[in-house]
Image 1 (cartoon, rainbow, N blue to C red):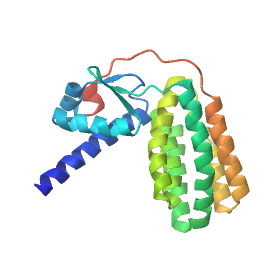
Image 2: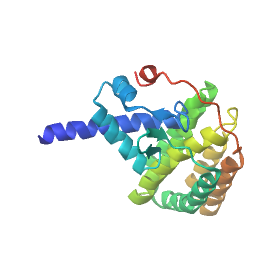
Image 3: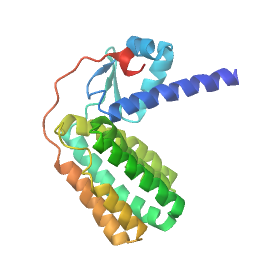
Length: 228
């Protein structure tokens, strides 16, 4: 019984993770309906597991559940966007300070390796990968801060940020300006707290300033191809 329960829990977590990744990569647009039956077919699992995964994502704010209508990818408002960035401006300076306090050679290598992945994605003009890696950079910093509560918050805030970018950003605008992450890492390596914090705040404000009050047209989703 315990083995089955653990297996089901693992399946639910995997479904939630893959839907989150699809949101972060802008493959699932805000407001699109997440039909349990079609997701179950795409993932080749029961509708019950899909329902549990959608409930997990609803608790994290990535999915909205409507009685008698079903589940939809959340569609944050302009006010939601402003409040999210205000929250991140409170959290991420502390993240930077903690990383400077804790980061050794191994942690700095992880940051540099991630920056290299971002550079490769930009060189390949892979916008989806750039968007996902940009969010993961901030999540990695939070993990390296050593504060599990902040890390958990950032794991929830970054996918929501990607949703907001999908809603309000120009498709031609990168999720994060290409030199800003590396400059933050360089300041961390130098243990220059004031500069690192200043760069992070500037970076977040820069991303927020790119937001536009426009919504992309709805697109048809090939569920089986997306999650094949």
